[in-house]
Length: 125
Figure (tube, rainbow, N blue to C red):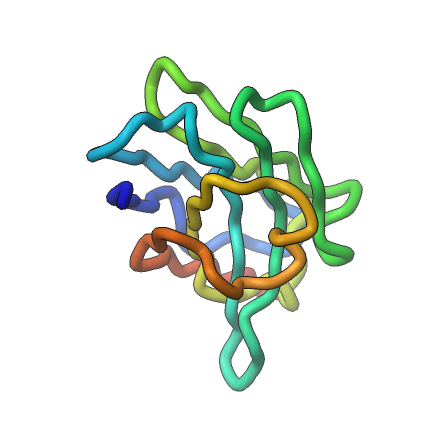
């Protein structure tokens, strides 16, 4: 397994931006597709975005389309989530995940090989 640590969460006003980072260690980072999920209080965990091994392929959940961008730097073993025009409904714990497969498996959180502990994002109105 790969060990994942998220950072970059915090409190931001509506309309603001945050950049989340997830740094991996333990295995070859470039052999993993990476993704971000989030879980708001009282709700199920949902996919935010995913990126393939090289960074050429990305996919987004409905809530992220047009506002969030996922990217990765394989030299730094890090995946990023740039979040713009944040809304109060984006408030959640954001989790980084890794899996050797990339594709429709990223529609859900099922079966991911590794997870980070999460970072809290709070968007005030």
